[in-house]
Image (cartoon, rainbow, N blue to C red; front, side, top):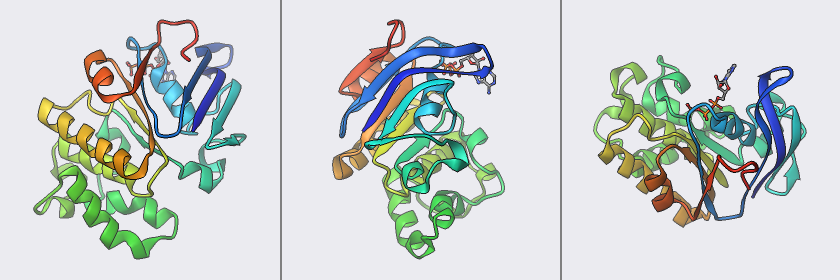
Length: 219
Ligand SMILES: Nc1ncnc2c1ncn2[C@@H]1O[C@H](COP(=O)(O)OP(=O)(O)OP(=O)(O)O)[C@@H](O)[C@H]1O
């Protein structure tokens, strides 16, 4: 599903934060990526999500070699991947109501007709009940906003879900609810998962295998 081969990536020319890393996630597989803060996990996750162009190496997603990243990546490839980041506040437009936040990818891909049914279905799956869908992002807790961000990541039915420290800021019950929602989605769709984090116990429980960043090559 995802093959990262010899990826080198960074933010300044000549100063890579990820060096020559390889990692593969098979179809239907859940892989945990574990490593200390600052080692480059999020950077690699952003490369895998086609949000950051690597300086070197190859990304193959769903059998297609990636040549373009960010808005230049072909839509069919971009929508193959759903991503949830650590901080919902940084990844959600505070002006949007949760309903509109979850619907964003459907609007962006011209699938407005699916909005009502899909948003209600996903709100239920991530445990957003009552009037929460009509509240603005600034009117809900971090945990509630992260639930909406997970729903948004699932709304186009991605074949690969990348959770980058998705639960790092959350309490135990919200963490359990979000992990359960991801697991239910994977059972239903056979989607693959790349879960990035610090918490070995959680990753070991959640994933088929966990790759430790300490290795020279993370495959
Ligand atoms: N947008 C950016 N511009 C410049 N440097 C960055 C940027 N994002 C990350 N870095 C740097 O790249 C390095 C790797 O960061 P990254 O976020 O990939 O690590 P991480 O392993 O995910 O860390 P954490 O577990 O703390 O999230 C760090 O030294 C960080 O300061």
